[in-house]
Image 1 (cartoon, each protein chain N blue to C red):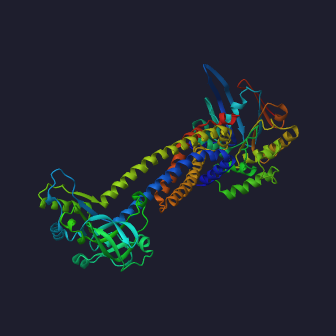
Image 2: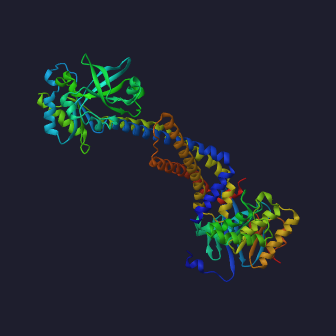
Image 3: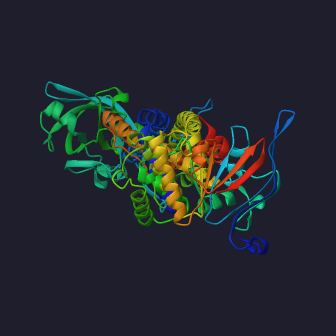
Length: 237
Length: 401
């Protein structure tokens, strides 16, 4: 499926965004949500994308997460040109390469924790027994080994987010993409969740956190700040 | 394959989660399918009943009769010579041939009386109508030749005026051609209950006697009663015989009328077929309405689960995965309704058959058609909502509250 150009992966670059624009047409008005973004993220980075609401960080997250395509410019993920991919090909890329963690957890209701974790593996066509085993291991890993049969509404916010993290890890994607992962959590749970991200990064995962809170961004090694659809600062710590 | 199993599980859990709603959605299909099956089965049952009725009248039986015309001639009537001529020419095609005539009378035994319809028949008649002879014998060829005063009577009549069915050898008095005569009973038959018994509305039973005992009918016969060999079409053969008779009496072809069981039966079958088709079509409309109900609920379900669709897409579900998920759900709802409807339909058809005292006939083909049709309804009316779900934009769907 990958063309020759796709295979020209440079060393350890994971994400490569070049002169990227996202333009929405709202009625007669053109809204430039992203204006010429240049961003490279390497394998194993722990990075946060900061900005107030309306800064364009969510649009960027959608594009990085392959939920949306740029209007102009290029986006390469592991050397794959995302702009040329069809909707179903993007689904496959999301399934294999990206682990989403959302602010509102986005667990499927009336579906047990373990079934929620199994979902990405179902779409990866993994066999039932294998994925059940894997899902249990992942829930163990996030400290929910005892609650695999619980429904989302029987879990606390922090526990739900841990299920979501286990689910994001299911197909062992290279990227963890978290959108305000602590936005709906109390400070104690927030710390726990950020610690999980940190340890995942230590294991080699690339973790991207989108947030508007400075103290959450402080957990990461690199903070990219957005304003009005542009990168205003890129600090490594 | 893997996804199909997953989708079935998913659909079942979603149906379970909304039990009442799923049931109400199914109801349209249940009512549609059960009424289609009930009607189709009742159609089949009545066909079977009528076929049986005709069998008791005699398969491939034909009556050629003289119609009423303005310029009636004496020669138009059949006589014994005609019968001989027909037997000579068409002997190989005919199993039974006799003049047919009957007269109403009263059978008397001492003080007890019963109304009877006396039918003059030949030997072999009992085979033609599959008579159930329970005592004694039927009319023989020598009975005809010797014009013996004998009769075969109905068991119910025997019970009515003798109080027993063992009446072989007894005499009854009847009136024949205006003369009172004593007739010896040589046989007793039992008639199966017929659907038309009630319609006849009389307590009269049939009594069989040699046709040669009716002299007036021997010379002026209006009817010829015959059975054509079963390997041939009774309609074709009887047409030839009727034409032959017409020609021999210098009448144009088609002068004599023909009534065949084959013809009558196919006419009635056709009528019944049309009738059940018409009622079935009306019932099928309820299936359509049921299908629209499914579509409506599936659209509601898609809207309610917009966020779930977004989550699934973000986790890697492709369009066809989402499409399949909703399609399988609507198919299961519809097929479950189909199965319940089929069961209900069979039960209803059986109940009606039992009430009408006829054997129930439920053809497997109609069940197959009904269940297949309900699944098709599920696909047809599920496609639109499922496609709508599949086409949702993942970002919009994730944002949906």
